[in-house]
Image (cartoon, rainbow, N blue to C red; front, side, top):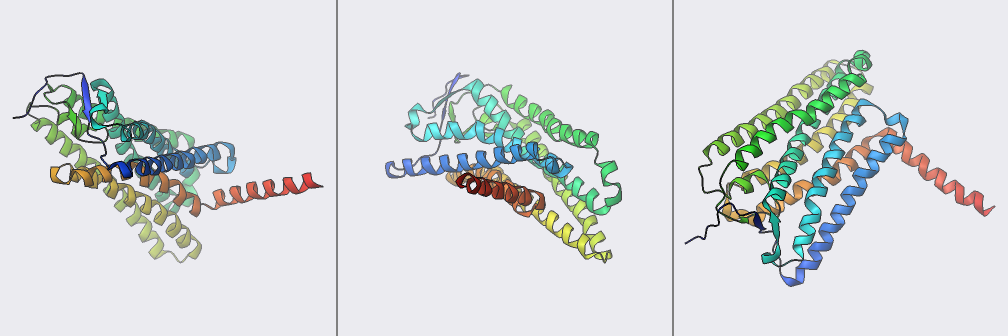
Length: 317
């Protein structure tokens, strides 16, 4: 018979369980990925700030994605790293901290989609309306897209978490390495039908909106490229859109895999790994993919490398 503790303020995280031989190996692997991801994202932000050539709508919108990755990673990884080294009985978290963590992780995941939708609109305007690009993608439009990308998910996630907070809790074990909404309402013995209905509505709406936006904008871009004989335009479209599409597919696959596996308790270990990969893989690959394909970023880094190489030679003289 299951033991019930009603509305306990202290919860226990199930975390990631490994044998003693693997604990320190996993700890250093996760720590390495965390440092690598934070360094790339912070480096990209600094690069955008100091190089005026990168003050373009595409890069300014992408900054939102890096900020989202930084917030999500900082909220999750320090806690996971700390819990890896602790025995299961000491992986404790307060209910209020769990709610905040669940809110941030859900907001982070939704914002990643809305930012990529805004970036898809930017690419559509750049390729389908190049002569009006500067007029349409003004600073005001970039600000509107940024506020919408953060504001709309905020409202939906407030309702999502609010529905979970209203429930009475009868369990204290969070069957996850960190708190998310699904783990939060699974603590309750009350009816969670409303939570499941709204959660399904929220997930489907986010999926349909993001996929629909990508299909619509890229479909029109493809039509323009097929009817245009401008090889330079087609090459630019292929380069920028393929990059954006790769980032979107990586993020969507890793995110929705974790959501789907929540429905199958027998695959809890796979779910934990997939959710962890959602924070590691897109966060580290996004900046690499965009940095490699961006001529402006490559040029800036090349000039910086050359200047650093010239200075030591002058000092020798």
